[in-house]
Image (cartoon, rainbow, N blue to C red):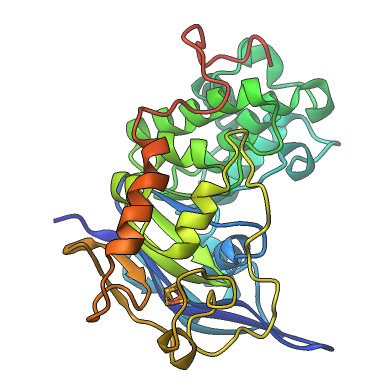
Length: 355
Ligand code: SF4
């Protein structure tokens, strides 16, 4: 049986603003097993990034944080800042959306990778530099021994994202959290970075939490999917199950609105900082019934599949889920074929030559 390296239970991140309490994350639960890729899917405002920032301790007071985040059995929310620092960047690494912004323009990329190495490991500056060259080669940057002395502005966006991946891997983490790692890149480069992440995850045996709204990325990388709406999870399951049979009406609308170019047509994410009683999707849901407004629906197995669960009154009750499942199969048919990652071509070699 696989062991969870990350376990998030009923996570809440509430922000006190002049307009009231914003429930940015509100009851999110999911697990990540060793060596697997879990995709957090949802639109802007669904709570994906705030959840990852909370998990890694990048959000603190005055935000009100509750729930439990266990990493390798250790409760991260109970750690002091210094204890958290030794975990973050060492055993948990974070990859940001825009690598150009994440890199420091006044230091060479070699210096920045070496700093990440020496921060967490007892090693000399010469050894750190050698290791930086090795890491640049590992992430597919050509001429690594020369490039190690270049500055971020001398590199393309794709190359900078490779450097950011090298920094993230410097301490050989057990868990990499990647927040929209390709959305700022040209579509032709996206596939190469996705391939690189997948390849590195398999070879280096870390777990990957991937935040994305791009279903092409999800289809090519995910082992499991967690769909978020209004700061909480509404569906979770194996990637093939969720993609082929999206069971929650929000998942179905999200997948149906996907245009194939990495975006969804209209925003479905809840902008309401104060979610409604009951199912928080009920105002937009075309299948809503009176029960949906009464109380938050619990998770239940979809079509008898205990590992595929949705928080909707149509599952686990006497209500007939047939209508939703019929719709699910129609929506999911688009993902039945082997989806290629964005920008993927047969000639793609994974290197940086065209970046
Ligand atoms: S619980 Fe009701 S409102 Fe919520 S998704 Fe299901 S049918 Fe729609």
